[in-house]
Structures are given as C-alpha cells and as structure tokens.
Length: 66
Image 1 (tube, one colour):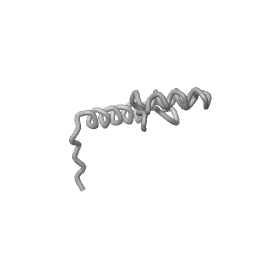
Image 2 (spheres, rainbow, N blue to C red; image 1 turned 180 degrees about the vertical axis):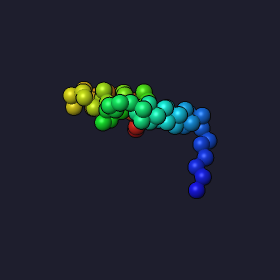
Image 3 (cartoon, rainbow, N blue to C red; image 1 turned 90 degrees about the vertical axis):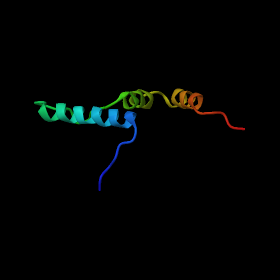
C-alpha cells in the first residue's frame, strides 16, 4: 500500500520525524522520549500548566458558538 503525501506541510513534518529518528539512532545515549515539531513542544508546555490556567488558555483558542 503506497502512502502519498499531498501536503507540503505534511511532508515537512515527516522530514522532521525522519531527521529526529536518524539523529537518535546515531546517538550514544538517546533519551527515552523526544518531542518533534513546534506543536508537540507547545503541547508539552500547556500540559504542565495548572488546570485553571490551561482551561482558560484552551478556551481562548476555541471559536465562540451561539
């Protein structure tokens, strides 16, 4: 089954992951977990916020309904 990448952004993300994997394979002592991409890094920061602050931040990013 051939997977086609239609989007340039998706291809860029795949390249970032491939580069990270290659770097980790060559590392003498690779870390157990690695964040790849800005979206993963932002999510990691948001997850460390206190619940009230995190909920406020997420609610500000969602569109308003009704």
